[in-house]
Length: 413
Ligand SMILES: [Zn+2]
Image 1 (cartoon, helix red, strand yellow):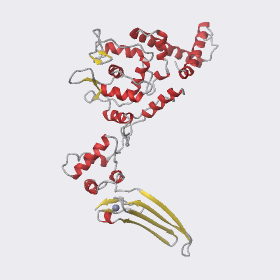
Image 2 (cartoon, rainbow, N blue to C red; image 1 turned 120 degrees about the vertical axis):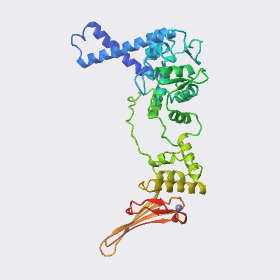
Image 3 (spheres, helix red, strand yellow; image 1 turned 135 degrees about the vertical axis):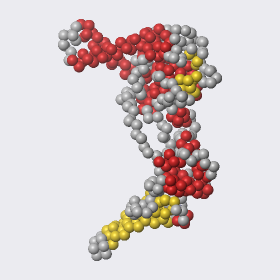
Image 4 (cartoon, rainbow, N blue to C red; image 1 turned 180 degrees about the horizontal axis):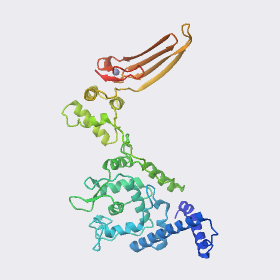
């Protein structure tokens, strides 16, 4: 046990042994302790009992000494970051009764190498159980799928989990990854070859995002597939490493459904054999590889495109796609562009009092020119205008009709 773990575990043990002494001496039962403390004592005793039962189950399976097993059950790393502390008894039971990986009274079907491994598990480190608890936390990150959608290969997944959990747990066997997934109740499907690996039912796109993040190559630049609990897991692991207390358990936020009309339309254009089809395929590929953000509107799409200085033919194809989108969805929000600057100048006025002149400059759609919004807020002299100053965009874009100057929006001509 590290000094950091010691700091966290010792006071708890002292309190619980003190309560046990009180309870044995009969003081607690005759009301010498306030009611809340009796309840605390009882819940603590229950949790002690659960820990002891877990330690005994782990000892029976692995041959690890009871105290070493209990130490692992009580490790700060094994208390659950994204869910409750996972029971070692459940882990042990899965090896017997799980429909895919359980022996169900017969010979073991799962070992460290994976399915159909007849060698016994290689237990013996002081962290076998803590490591499994960490693998379970890593698996809890991902959204489960149905059995039919199970598609993440356990062998690839185990490498992702190792990199994610390093340095706490930098080696995970294929079999233990499958074991943890089975204990969590994730769908498990045999591969066509029937080899040692299984297909695991977790979100493939969330997996690929995390893999890209931990692989050490180019990190994701778009985060729509980032698992919600990832920050909490990484923060909790860092706190354990530093010996500081872990924050309150993560509570998943309620799912929010956001309408993404332009995204929905563009992703249905990928089968086309023209430039718009090319644009759509490039967009979908960028979303899959976490390098493009989801474009809720045509304006989002254009901003993302212009930011990477597209070739002229790519830009033209994108404008064609946006023009088609507005024909298909005439009530869609027109395109707003990136704001560049805002200035306000006080002026003395023309007899009726002072005022100011406001000038807000935006990029034009192609990014080479400007959209300029001007407001003369002077008593007796009020004028508001918006103009597109770009030779290239002039023939391609027009202001959407029926909108105020401040609420301007552009649509392809
Ligand atoms: Zn322009």
